[in-house]
Image (cartoon, rainbow, N blue to C red; front, side, top):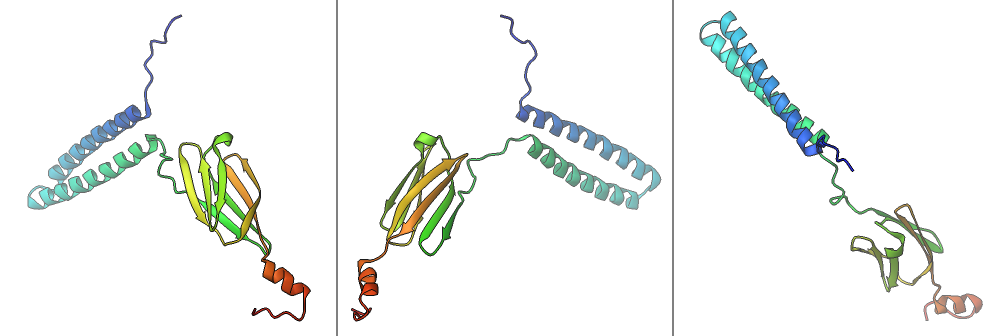
Length: 170
């Protein structure tokens, strides 16, 4: 088995190479600009113009280096904000959340006014929900968790609806 003798270039190395290239080109342009301004505008005014031009060139070279560095750096998902939606209907509440997997690690627990969501990579989040809900079903597809909850009816409300003589205040 023969190993590949060509070294692989990582994104960080590419960013460093591109940054150095921008720096060298910037120094060259500053030098040419300074020579041109000093030749054309002799005296104090020429030096002031050359200084201002050099300062602006340095500023823009720094900006370009930061842009080039940002292009080669990988995105970081660890700082990603967790998002979820609560959709409330008359008899049902649906919670849709972005949860890291795998499927076997995704679990949901409902206790009083709190829904706890567990996922992969030691993911655990709590969502406040209205009282008296029960889980109907859950589904997890492509990193999206759907939890359907139904509102439980109170015993007092059910019995008072059936008896027209009973007051709702009691």
